[in-house]
Image: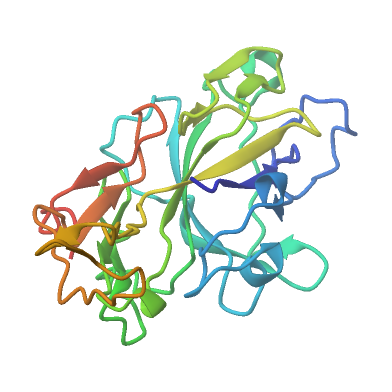
Length: 284
């Protein structure tokens, strides 16, 4: 499968009235920055219909969406909602990846912090980005296929992307979910974040300046290609069939394939998407 990577360069930042513990000036806030690229120059259909390269992903209306869950000193349990970021669009402005408003890492660390808590943020991402109404999660456009809805901003638990397959191959939209590309090691205070490559970004503690949140986007769908082999050298009534004989395939059918589903972005399976039923109670 084609795999494209989106690297989210997480710069260490400081929030109001809290001390910063990093190699940067302690009173200087630094915004989170993003970059994006296709892995090894392969192509993908993410963002719009048809195949495209990084340039297409950077086109108008493309980009990717991010959900971020702030859980303070508690580990992510699936009970909280995406209060830090809800379907945050990361888009291309012609020279860099941008979003608004800018977010900053919380800054609670041991003796240098304003409390004994260690702030944790859990990140999930998908592509291509779609705009939805946060209160009901429904796509704001007239989509009848592709990504049609997301889990609501008021609902706790893993983010869900609802998808309907188009029966027109020219209108199929690739759906991808993001995982850690190389894993995370040290946070700003030197401790490990313990995020393995290929896993979702769970319970991330404030990163050091220059460290990255590298998104490796995996394809949640599989393309089906059909090849017909014809035995044109068969014998009929003692006469060889001419090699130029035309054979007409009247129909090809498949059984047991899902045409819609709900993708859970918190997939812990090795390189595998976590599909749930389309009528999941946590989706519109």
